[in-house]
Structure formats: structure tokens, C-alpha cells
Length: 83
Image 1 (spheres, rainbow, N blue to C red):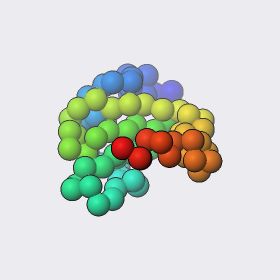
Image 2 (cartoon, one colour):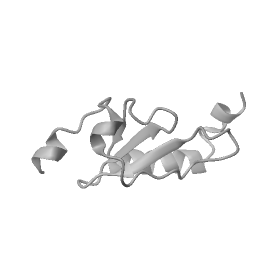
Image 3 (cartoon, rainbow, N blue to C red):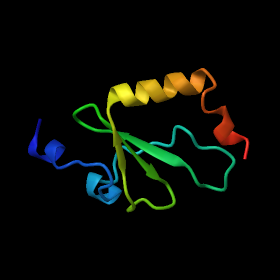
């Protein structure tokens, strides 16, 4: 693990991770507000709110992302979209 990777922590300013590499895999018809994700060099995934790119980044392991995606595919998060 590099020194940079060891300085990456949950809740850090997303701007500290740089502006390159952020993607909007979950964007939709919501007025430009979406979740952005960035693959980090050590395999972890950073997530930020597109409307607050300097705000906090949540950092997840690949296993946590895989579990979340599997749960969504099984419908375990459907209640979050019903309003």
C-alpha cells in the first residue's frame, strides 16, 4: 500500500482524491444530482455526491460494493426508491 492509499479514509474531502476518474454510473432524470464513484489504486471505491464534489467521500472495499450491488439486484433496496 502506498503512502497515498494509507491516507485515504472514510469521510475525507472528495477533492483530496483528485478530479480525474470520477464516473456517474447511477445518474438519471434527477436534475443533475447523482452519485459519482471512483476506483482507487488499491481497489477500493470512493463515492461522492455530484452536487458537492469537495464534500465527504465514502470509501468502500470491493467486497462491500459487490455486496451492495448483489443486494440491489435481489430487490433489497427497492424500498429506498418508493419515496
